[in-house]
Amino acid sequence: MLYQELQVLTRDEATYNEFLAIEKLYMADEAMTKRGIDICVVFLLSGLLAIPMPSFAQYNDHRDKQVDSLEQVLATNPPTGADMVRVYRDLMWGYMQTDTEKSMGYARRCVDSAAALEGWFAVQDGHLVLAMNHYEAARYDSAMVYYNRSLEATDRMRKASKYTEGEIDDALSMIYGNMANLYNVQGMLHEAIDHYIRALRLFEKHEWNESRSIAHNNIGEIYMSIRLCGFHKRSPL
Image (tube, rainbow, N blue to C red; front, top):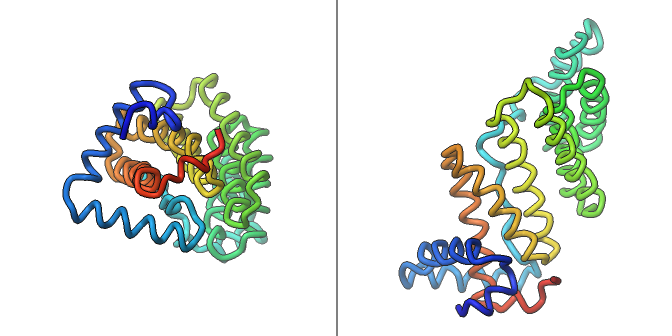
């Protein structure tokens, strides 16, 4: 692909060079090329522009939490302070896959309780869960509102002295990756690639290799769809 063509989706030469590295991975042999063509056909049939990004491995999976037991605790012997925030966080993640309304309700409680304690990691986490629930329901405008609120909370994390660089970067990488998914399904490939690369740089910085592989895969899938299907012609700039 010519550099001038790739400028449709990249802002600078450094990003272009990252695409060249990805291209080598995805065009290594004929089998990989055929896989890209198959992906292209799937996109054309489904009307999607990319495959949704799996959850990042760096976050704990809350789906195995005993949400019924936690709700019983809230009803009979509710904790206070930071312990209450932890329960709300476990419940908002625990209900993500099974009960959207409960997940969002506990996320709102998490945000309110954590903000009162200046627990900005939990605040950003609560906004993130709200955004992800809106995303799953295809309420994309609302999802973006909460992703941006989650980003605002990371700014507060930076200003506070109690959060490590790893904690801040972990939060940012999760937000960037999910924002990239949102741009991706809306066909905004330039913005999607930009945010996948933001997440990728954080994964590389901390050697979070599983998450780095997921990000490379998502960028590569978009790149293949552009190269083989010409979707960049339809991407809003």
